[in-house]
Amino acid sequence: MQNLEALKNLLYRLADDFLIMGHRDSEWIGLGPILEEDIAFASMAQDKVGYSLSFYTLLHELGEADPDTIAFKREAIHFKCAQFVEMPIQDYAFSLIRHFFFDYAADTRIQALKNSSYDKLRDLANKISRELKYHCMHAKTMVTQIAKGNEDGNSRLQEAVNTAFPMALSLFEPTEFCEELAQAGICPTEASLQKEWLQRITPLLIEASLSLPQVPEPNPYYGGRKGYHTDYLDELIQEMTAVIRLEPEAVW
Amino acid sequence: MYGNLTIIEIDNFGKKIEEEDPIKLAEFEARIARGEKIEPQDWMPFEYRKQLIRMIEQHAHSEIIGALPEGTWITRAPGFKRKLALMAKVQDEVGHAQLLYAAAETLGKSREEMIQDLLNGKSKYSNVFNYPAVTWADTAIIAWLIDAGAIINQVTNSKGSYGPYCRALERICAEESFHLRYGYDTCVHLATGTPSQRKMLQDALNRWWTPIMHFHGPPDKISVHGEKLMKWKVKLASNDEMRQQFLDMYVPKIWELGLEIPDPNLHKNPETGKWEYTEPDWNEFMRVINGDGPCNKERLAVRRYAEEKGRWVRMALLRKEEKYVVPLA
Ligand SMILES: [Fe+2]
Ligand SMILES: [Fe+2]
Ligand SMILES: [Fe+2]
Image (cartoon, rainbow over the protein chains, first blue to last red):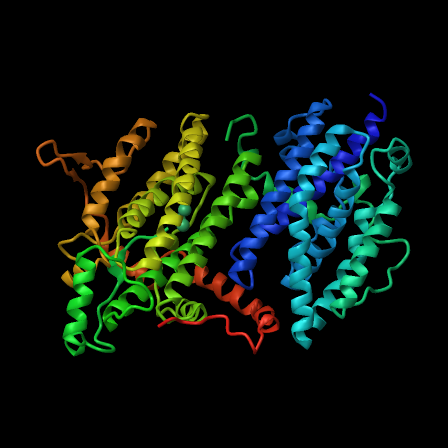
């Protein structure tokens, strides 16, 4: 198969982003500001972990280990997720803004993958995009309502935007496979996806009276795609594998 | 999840039953006797309303507090299958709380007031959630046997007289049966797994046996329960009846997995057809209900933390022109 290495790299990035983001989202169960948010985050967490499973399954079909092995028995250095998804959930303002940035980014990419030349990716993108639409809708509704609700809500979300935006750009960190994937029609370049994402979120933020901050160059949050991660990822993996490591060969 | 109907206290606050309109009261009782459901806009005696609010509210609290011991294991669940199932289960439990708060609100108490009463200790929740889930196997035991106990309780209560509560329970029971299957499947894997997995499961059962025996509340001979509550179909079966039903359905299954139940006296009396057992420590039960269990403080602290950290969000979402809660009573 042509472009196999590039394709696997893309699938790892997708799968790892969804797994770690879903894992983080699930940490809100029991801690949300209203029960409806506990439920919303729990439900989006399941969807995301479910997508990661689908992408790991594609990887398995391409010769990689089985999904449980890839996800639960790999060291941080082999993960390809963006540093953005590794960050702890912090307060609700940060988590909500991350959810907004992440889901619009994921949706932008998945929409593009509906035209991928790789048929299995295309099929999966078609399936996923039907649900991701609702994740975006939820993010947009909550951000708008809170940011326009009162001054305090607006200033907390603005602060979260200032913190999260440079991190969010790490979702589009260029990789060595960018051009190859674009040329093969598998996935557009990171630069073009980022541009499209910005075009989608900017009017929504303006509508919510929020603005995007300047970002330092080079972006300090780049590195995840190459295996450079924050310590948070290692902590997360230690926790995620705490039970499985007790008896790695057992069936749980 | 829910147990211990007996924590309903009968106090003398509010309108006494003798002060109710006798004609309306007789009509009300006749309707219940005919098997009709009471709906929010219907007339009902003050005490009926009060007891139902208390019961549904405690049930709702049990669901959100109950989500905590298992919730902390979502991030550690071993493998995709378990991780996805546990997320779904805990999400369901929070959803049950939401449904139940809505049912209680139809009786005139807002969700905010109920949560305040949970935090200030005025309102209780099921005792079992004051015990810790020490290992992964504890979550398996909870999902199987605590949810099993809850199903017995909830199926019983779904035959009660208050319409909104019955309908909420019907939906809840459908989801609980999925929890039970998940819990049983997880237990089976541990029971048939490696020696250390089996030990982990046995240890968890040993830890949870007392809370399981406590689940349906004190024995009938020491618990006061009103005839009135039975007549009004607020309470439909006695604690011992529900406990017998639980033992009948689950003790054989526990033994089948090769587990040992930590009560040498547990056996079914062939003559009476009833299970006999060592009474669990009911003083411990009372102590834990009244706030002195291994996790009471921690559980409420988490709830309080979520409430406080989330206040600004609720304030920002508040629309003065909209009233979110319109109590029907
Ligand atoms: Fe439940
Ligand atoms: Fe439950
Ligand atoms: Fe349950």
